[in-house]
Length: 195
Image 1 (cartoon, rainbow, N blue to C red):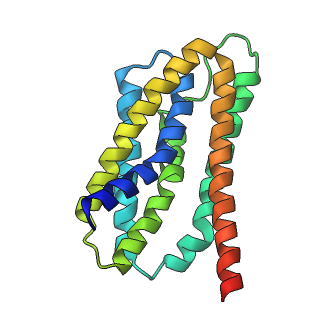
Image 2 (tube, rainbow, N blue to C red):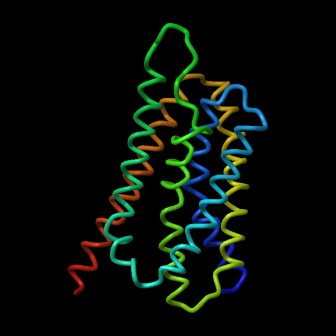
Image 3 (tube, rainbow, N blue to C red):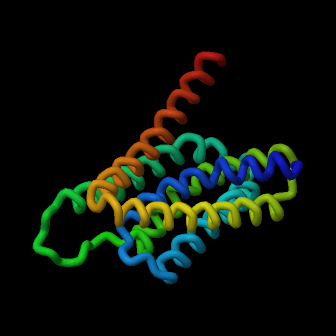
């Protein structure tokens, strides 16, 4: 795989992580080193590991991944995005918000949801007989960089526009999940019509 193609794939894969980190940055106040490190590290790690897992699995799990990955990503992003919208609209009693996208299962769910498409890239690279280690490293590093950029831009927007940005951020997560789902379903339909 040539360098230009590798960078293009890495940037394309990082776009979901970037969009999710924009939403996460909008609700992380103040944005400190720890949540930035946790999100950038985990998003990059999952983006790097998923192609390796796809590459190692090869054709043995391709049918399962193709059949369910878009549903898993959609469900995770719908749940987390819905929580963000609900908590942004809830006036509450002034207590600190329950959702922290840089901790626990929420962070893991976001990392998995934004990196499932990298699993399919790993499967594709296995079929093309591409050695996975360098592409995996580049994909992970690019995802980490885009995550940091998204966090900083999201925090600036959150400070400027407040809870409205949190609602938009949650809606973006739901939209990304819907895009993943609809893209996969329309692709499956097109393939079925061709065959």
